[in-house]
Structure formats: structure tokens, C-alpha cells
Length: 431
Ligand code: DLL
Image (tube, rainbow, N blue to C red; front, side, top):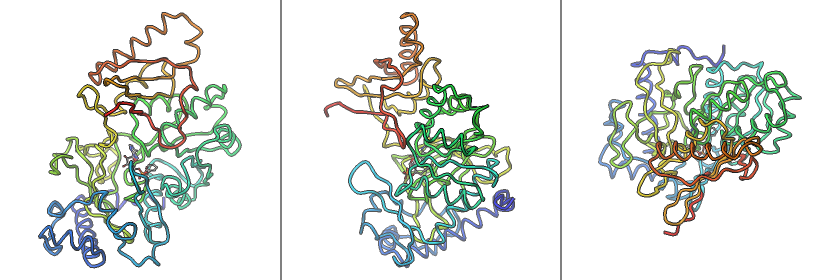
């Protein structure tokens, strides 16, 4: 198989690290020479790029944060002349301007190559048909996946998100075998398929789905897998690092392999910036090793995860990380307790009777209200069932996050539907 780079994916660790070092040195030289902002940062840190003798020496270099992307915005970190950049992608932050990331021809090809490699790792072949239900446009999600899937020879249906009726018709008419979709929209699509009485195993040809772009729990994966009778693979990435395809699950679905020939990964304590030991939770920091237009050194992703120290059963040498536990930016504090939306989601999706959509509303006096849609037939039954379900949700959330929520049970279809990245938390508290 063309994209199963056995020699690259299973080469001895030492060889992989040699390749990383060689690429790191080249990257550093390049940013030092071509990017004044990096030259200054490196000079200020009192380390000369020529002193980098091992990949561990990367720790001597300064971090890049998203604030660095706004110095001399938008072209300030470009390491090639603008006429050699052929694509722009952006990622909106919580405030102000979006982060702008540029790609050269080589970068586009390389990002597609990583996707191709990832898809093949999950068993995809050119016989597959991929319905790409991510947003096409400035967001990397759809386009980067699109180019990668085409590279394998997969037939791509550029559906984009939304218009769920049409999504299902496309699946039926063209025999879609794979979906690329956000977890929140996948939950919704699965519920519509279910409500329409479509039997996915008989009426559709779906085999697998690639879910990413936002955090989700193992319970959500399981729920959608069961509803659709498919395998779901976690796909991680961020615009600053090409978009999707930085990390991807293999057939064992036990964490995401980071493509370490392209990205040097570190996990650090988000407060101190010091490395944590393998297996410990911290913030993922990534350095691009193969990027032409806009290399980034020690980029603070804000994503919390841990390295899985055990080797993977698949034999790949590229280390795995656990699913992203949350983004430090997404964390909210209620009654002094730090909570990630995903902790609430994990509880909800493991409870029988809970449907696909929920929202967390933070009210005055630190009241956490969890508004959750439940199966429609529960409203036709006995009131005691509803009372019991509500109690179960309250108890399980309280024992998971240590804060007692107020729970509102809603009919399916009450809450806004998310077609892209879901907005789960609404903070109405006055500060
Ligand atoms: O979301 C790239 C992407 C598209 C990845 C499609 C996977 C699939 P951004 O819009 O820049 O890029 O957002 C990046 O989304 O830092 C994480 O916080 C979050 N994220 C992405 N993938 C996952 C995932 C794309 N599998 C930010 N699990 C990242 C959890 C994810 N969070």
C-alpha cells in the first residue's frame, strides 16, 4: 500500500530521533535567518541554534505562544517570500483577530501526505467513499482532509456541514463508507438517522468515521459507534500545525499517534513550562519539523493531554497521546472547582435515556445548570422515570466534578444544533 510507510513508521526510535534532530536543526537555521521575530527571540534567550546537539536541547529554546502570531500580523512569521505561499487558513481565537497560517506548495502536499498516511493506517483504501462534512473555507478541517483523501484515491464528497437531510441522502445515494465530521454534529446526524427509522447497518454502507476538531469523550465515541454500527477514529490537529492529521488513531483506537517525523512533541506543566514525565497530564507543545512557509518552534497548543508511554500494539514507533482532555481555555470555574465541559459530556453520554445534545449554563451565584435533551419516548411514560433520570444525572455529575448541578430535562430538538464546533458553555455570570 502506497501510503503505509512501513520503514518510516516502524523505524527504530533512535533513527527517528536522528531524523528529528536533523530536521530541527534545519528548521532553526531557517527561522533564525528568515524570520526577524524568531531571530530576536532566540538571541534574547541566549542560545545559539548551533548549540542544539540533541532533541532534548529543544528545552533551551523559548516557547512560541499565540501572541507571537500577532506580532507583525499577519505576515510576520512567514519564512518564505509571500509569492511562494499558496494558501491561507485561519483559526478564530476567543478574542480579536484570527490566527493566520500560510502554506507553501510543499506544505500543502505534506499535510495531504500525513492525512493519507493516517487514513490508510485505519484501513481506508481507494475503494472508500469519504463524505467530508467539515466546513470548507478558512477552517483547515475540510480542505486538508480533502486533499489527503484524494491522495489515497478515495472518492471525496465535499458535503460540508449542515442540511442533515441532504447529508443522509448523499450517504444513501452514493454509498458513503466514511465520514469526516465533528463529534457534536455526528451525534446529531446519528439521532436524525435513528429518528427516521433508517437502519444504518442495512440501509447505509458506513464503516468508519473520523471525528475531531473539538474534545469529546470515550462515551461519546461509543454512543455514536453503537448508533451507527461503525468504527470511530480520533483525529487531532490545529491550524497552526497544518490542521487535521497531527495525531491520529490506528486500528487499536487507544490514543493518537503523533507523526513525530513531522512534529516534535513535548508535554509541559502549563504553569511552569517545565516538562512533565511521560504519562503525566500537561500541555502539549509542538515544533514543526517539516514546514516550509511558517515553521513554529515550541508552540503552546493549550491542549491538555499525556503521553502514553507503552508501545502500541500496531508496532508504530510514533508515540501516542491520550485523547485531548480539554483546552486550558475551555476550563471554567464553578464554586472554586475547575471543570472541563468534557467531564460533563462524559457523564451524560454514559447515561441511558440521555439523547445527543446538551448545554451548560453558568448562572449568577455560581449556579451550574445542565440542560440536557433526553429520549422522546421518556416524555410519554411515567413521571417517576423522569424524576429518576434527573436524579441519576445530578448524582453522577456531582460525584464526577464535585459540584451539584441543576438539571433541566428537555425534548430533543430544543437546543441549538451544532454543525461545526459546538458551543457548550454559556456563561451568564456577572464578574
Ligand atoms: O480543529 C483542526 C482539525 C480539523 C482537527 C478537523 C481535527 C479534525 P483549529 O480550528 O485550529 O483546527 O482548532 C484546533 O481544536 O487546539 C484542540 O483544542 C481542538 N481539537 C482538534 N482536534 C481535536 C480532537 C482544527 N481530536 C483546536 N480532540 C485544538 C480534542 C481537538 N480537541
